[in-house]
Image (cartoon, rainbow, N blue to C red):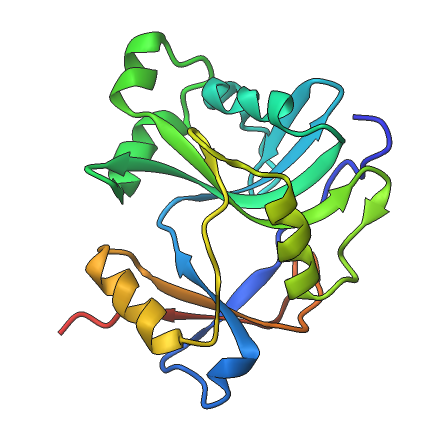
Length: 199
């Protein structure tokens, strides 16, 4: 993986109990109930590293296809999720988490997806100092939208609608990222998360 940093820890979000009044100044994403992962793609190989610096690629061999889908070395931020009937199922994902060499039967029983929502490096170019909107635009140019790797949409403003969609999908809530937000590894700065409140 020459040329890319060896380790970038993911940026974190602070919990809020309500949507902010200036919600139009944020980009809003659905909050997926999965396992945060930084993906390092270079020289035909994929490394997947967890929030606590654990190497995870061996546990999710189906995500190695990512190496064939990008034409330049990249570092991506995303979430590994296991779906049951179209919805993330953390219990199903747990059946994969600590299995270093899953067999075909387990992979078929608990298939995973990688939902990518940030581009941190492209080649030798760092995008950490670029605003959220620029990073998302460059990410979308990669065209990662085929199983098992997808780039979920984001929404400029419309926070209440995104939160309602989250509830309808049975998800945890939403993440808000200021449109001008830079990427600060391993820090809580200006990203926020708003969880659904069960009545």
